[in-house]
Image 1 (cartoon, rainbow, N blue to C red):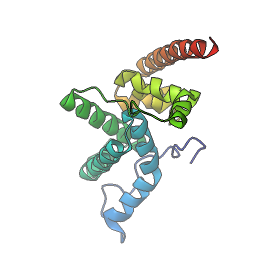
Image 2 (image 1 turned 45 degrees about the vertical axis):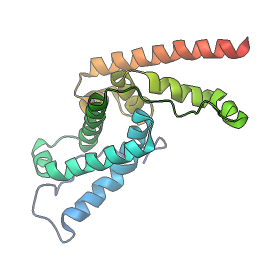
Image 3 (image 1 turned 45 degrees about the horizontal axis):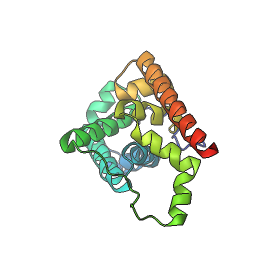
Length: 188
């Protein structure tokens, strides 16, 4: 794994879709989950802003992997991109079904220690990332936090590399604008 938590670039395991070895599908699943479980979960946590929702979506992502593992072998594509695409699509579906705005996790009567934490730049950056539209947030998180190239981001989200670059630039520009505003407030 690299320092940012992304797995090494794996192709679909060579034995995928063939007759199971002694360890069978379970061994294959452990290999794939071992390589991608934590990065996909981290991506979903950042994308949704809710660890329990990320747990559910991550579980469903890997259930879909098990259901489609044989057809993935025929595609001979990058497994990581496929998993991130499924995770993103599941998140989109969840937001479409609920059609509700996610509530802020900070209670109105937060204690002073919590307020100090909220003023922390890290917390503010996280909050501003959560406010990005889902399409920009997904590209930003895959590129900045999962360390995927623009080409791999495009493959993961089923968009062109150029679109991935443009969305990343737009997300970065929006964040820079919003954070500049926040930093100006702190210096007044």
